Amino acid sequence: MAIAVFGCNRKPFVNHKLKLEKISDNCENLKPSFRMVSNVVGERFEFEKCLVGNFTNEMLNVSRQGDTVLVQFPKASAQKTLFKITLDIDSYPRYNFITVDGETFVVATSQN
Image: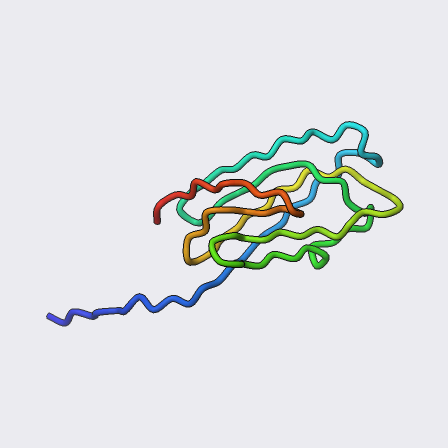
């Protein structure tokens, strides 16, 4: 009988997946809610954001600073479009805060 022992030598990381759903061509009906769903593979955040009309996933910057995940969207200048944002974050080690464009939220993550 052979027993394999694997060491858990994970390096820190932060991965994200972004889904955009256009709500309207203007930002008049922006709802300021912020929703989080936590599960064993990470956290899902849902919120509305006013962005440039031609926003693409490559314009989003997600990084890690200590126990905080930083999410930065480009500033919408001229043409603003309202989007529903679904942002999945998977990060190691565990993080306790997420900051979206300067606004910080406490994260109650699931225990893996």
